[in-house]
Amino acid sequence: MKVMSLIQDQKISVLLAIPSMYRVMAATEGDFKVSSVRFPISGGEPLPIPVAEAFERRFGVPIFEGYGQTEAAPVVTLNVPAARKLGTIGRALPGIDLAIWDEHNRFLPAGDVGEIMVRGRNVMQGYHHLPEETAKTITDGWLHTGDLGKLDEQGFVTIKGRKKDLIISAGENIYPREIEEVLAQHPKVKEVAVIGVKDEVRGEVPKAFVIAREGIELDEKELRTFCRENLAGYKVPKYIEVVADLPRSPTGKVLKRMLSRSA
Image 1 (cartoon, helix red, strand yellow):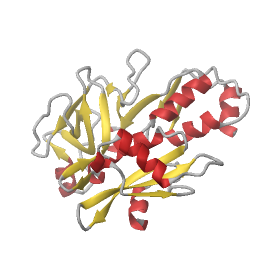
Image 2 (cartoon, rainbow, N blue to C red):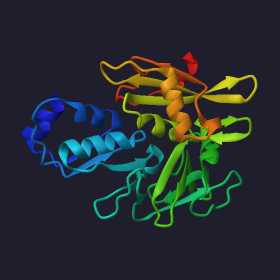
Image 3 (cartoon, rainbow, N blue to C red):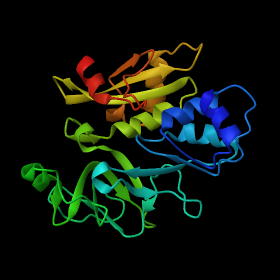
């Protein structure tokens, strides 16, 4: 793999990549010497815990997950060597205020899920010549990220998913990332993406698109049983589709909007 050779030859110490690349690196065959890497950073999409664990087992260094947006110039939070909590996107960087708001723009306490809001000198002044869009996105200097998450007592942030991706099934909120994290733990699953699809009875139900590990056959019933053992009943995907690959952007990020069109 060219990336691995470059890291080895150039003694790269800081590496920024999306989870899909770390997944490939962890599975790459060969005896690559990448001990120079001391700060691998993940962003762009959620980092599955199995990917982080596989990378650390292979190379002996943890991945530091972070989070940001273009409108926030662009890094907002980051796990660092002195303060890392697997499964979170870390704490807000110095000089940045981060809070969780409910749908009425009220601050929520630690542990409650709401929209991640950001304030600081890093936040944009607005969209160029788009005052209406700016007014929807910024409230009293706070940036609406459109992402749902929660804070813990130590200030670490856990992402629950995009606000627009939230599945409301018979009045119950279902976060696709929670289902994805469970299915990603299955030993036969390489990658997974979950979306909401319309349902005549419940309004919306989860549908999982799953990629099997190389040379392994996936059984839908087996996956559904695994979900029932690890999720509340209403969160178990009604539909599970095994696919060869997922639609992606040029950088490898999964495009859920494309899945929604084909579902």
